[in-house]
Length: 329
Figure: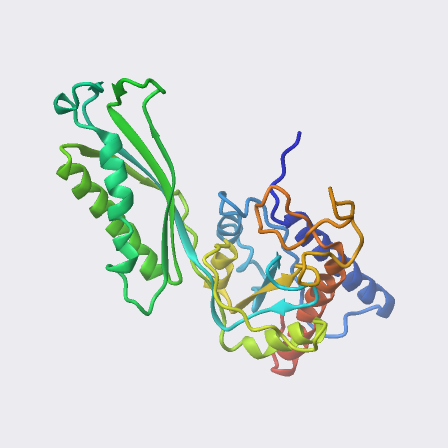
């Protein structure tokens, strides 16, 4: 229908299916698995907007017998070159929430603004005021984002001041506490800005499920970085900075030691994928366009690397746990 999510989740499922096939083939060819334990393969629904990982966790994906000891996930990453595998210790992705604010004013004829309480002007003031939430409200050593992404007021008439305005956006931070701070500050600034313009903040709604920060476990980092290096083109993992993107994998990382990876798919640095393509003008389709870009394209050559990463993580985790005298999962 001319629509796509443009984020690579089909690739993630393909890579996990490939690793699952190899794991089962290894088990069947040997008659038993090389190491004691269980590998739980998770095909998680509703990553964006539905908090699928939270639902699965509530239904026992981590606690059902045998309980999970480690969890791993990955995402294709266009800003890393194909062949690179990025991972870090600590905060990997941001905690995130969405908001909808409604400002109630008094509508009327645009020729008589003094008889109205204009929610458009108040919305504009709020957009400017809320910028101080990060620059003046947060510890300068912490990171946060407040983005206003939608303002809706009126029905298109040129000479009518509308009675209300709806403001939507997202807030993000690298810790759950900082996200809570942003949430409280956002409502405070919206309330006071509305009052200053003679309006009221009629409602402030946040997402049913805000996403926690995705934290890579410090103790798991040696194993994670080793596996990333083993499958990367350079033979070592690629250090990466945290990103303000969000992942509901963070719900799993809240429950068990976990590591999340960025699988480079940005081609050779010029946007060219490893395989030839059928681009509109240059014969190749760029694979370094941002996630959610309308022309996002997958470098399919990285699928094999992702399969190898999942396989190494699963087998080497079981080996490590068995050597420590634990039944692994």
